[in-house]
Amino acid sequence: MGIVGTTNPDGFDLGPNPRALQLVWFSLLILGQAGLAFLLMTFYLSRSLCPRMPVLYNLVLLSFLATPIYLILFYSNEYMNTNPPYSLCLVQAIFKHGIDPAFLLASFLHVFETWQNASRGPVQQTHSKARQRIILGLPHLNFVVASISTAVMGTRFPEKVARGGHSFFCTINDGPFGTIWAVEMAILAFGTLACQGGICILFWKHRTAARLLGAPSSLDHFQLMRISIFNVCTLVCSTFLAILPLFVFIIFSSHKDILKYWCHSRRAETSKTIPPKPEDDLYLP
Image 1 (cartoon, rainbow, N blue to C red):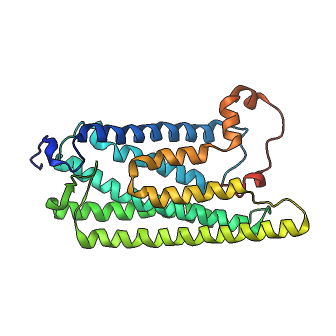
Image 2 (image 1 turned 90 degrees about the vertical axis):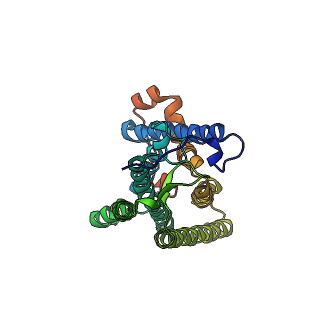
Image 3 (image 1 turned 45 degrees about the vertical axis):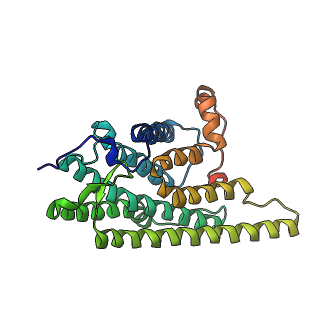
């Protein structure tokens, strides 16, 4: 089954040159895709990086998996078609509606775990493996539920599978369906902001106590800035999805041990010095 397509650029609401604008969007997505792939390989291959929280690995993985989903029309050379083939559009809509809430849930869990770890300070982790598996599995479960519901909606009502004239991807054009997932994402966004507020309050308390005691704070400005920038990018850039994967790559690859590994990978891998303590990176996103 297919939707009759058109390649008339006038069907877009993307200004006088929709092709150029879309190519800019796709270029940003491809840059983010390449960067996130490189970052994931660094996490996997390097033995000199200090450990990160498992929720961070999960978040970067989901960010990477989102890029091919948003590039489907580009890969299939249908990006100048205002009405792509039904099957192609449905596939993109299914995965798009699945990855969006999964990414936001992973973002919330990452910020929540950062807040919890910062509250405990540099102490030994006491979380059970079952709790860790649940936290890591929740975004993927959300992806499955959202994708299945989208597939059912798109199969029963094929006329609601459409590409908007102002976007570079296909969605399900249904008010109640969109409202349900919009409410979930709004709740996750509110929870993320609440955790961000908790991190700011904790940071302020640490700074105040450190000044009174004349000792350095265990939380520094760079850590708070990294977390804050990530939250802003997640919440604000969700309206400009093309640049979000690149922002995720820049934020999480800008830590000094990763940059040092990339610049001196051979020396870092052959060095026999003791790597940084895990708690040194405990508060980082």
